[in-house]
Picture (cartoon, rainbow, N blue to C red):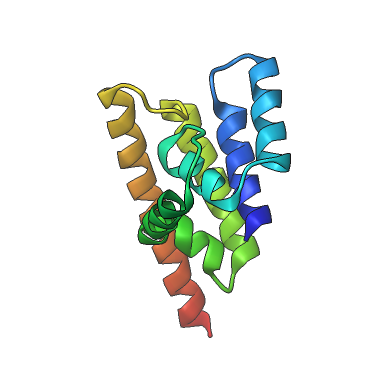
Amino acid sequence: MSAILKTFAAYAIKEMKISKTGKKQLINFVANEASEAQIMAFLLDGKIVHLDEHAEQIVKDRFQANTKLHEAMTSKQKHFLTVGVANLFDQCAKKCGTIAISAKKRECLKTCRAKADAAIRQAKMKAKAKK
């Protein structure tokens, strides 16, 4: 799952409105130094944090509770959903901005990602119906 987490983090970093140097530093950190829990925290909160053991468990529980990310990464159809969710996330990030600091951007991302969740659920239902 670590490779998929890193892929999602790379998409998030790619869309951030920071300098190229900052993006390179973040990508290097995610690729080489970040723990799985730190990447999960980055995907959930949009920032890099230092985590102790207790905090890592909290982040993992939060990540599992986040249905869009967790389903995309644990599904039997990993490839299809990884590409699909990455594209949907990319579209939301382009529309709203990746890191949602203001309430307006957070609401935009929340609405866009809710639509993405609905599209994923619909695709899953269609896939199950074909079987």
